[in-house]
Length: 116
Image 1: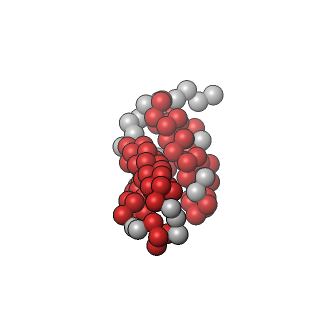
Image 2: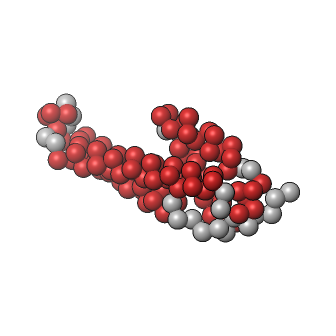
């Protein structure tokens, strides 16, 4: 197994913790009185629900990304998860090098992709 796979699994673990924290923030927004947030009750409910749903929706794939099997389709899923990390400013220094090594022929071959 290439070292890149181990780094990818650690990266997915970090991403899943980040998105779990986002979901927790959504819960915190929902239980905090709207007056403390400087929002109307409907605003706070909609915003808290959106943050919670997005946190959970992004948490699940990153959690599953830690155990991707060595199959060609899994490489594409991993690629997409790394690109999700690129959109998070604090993770760009981790995402870009990982993306560089993810496209290497050895990693693609480990996933059973035809490297040309």
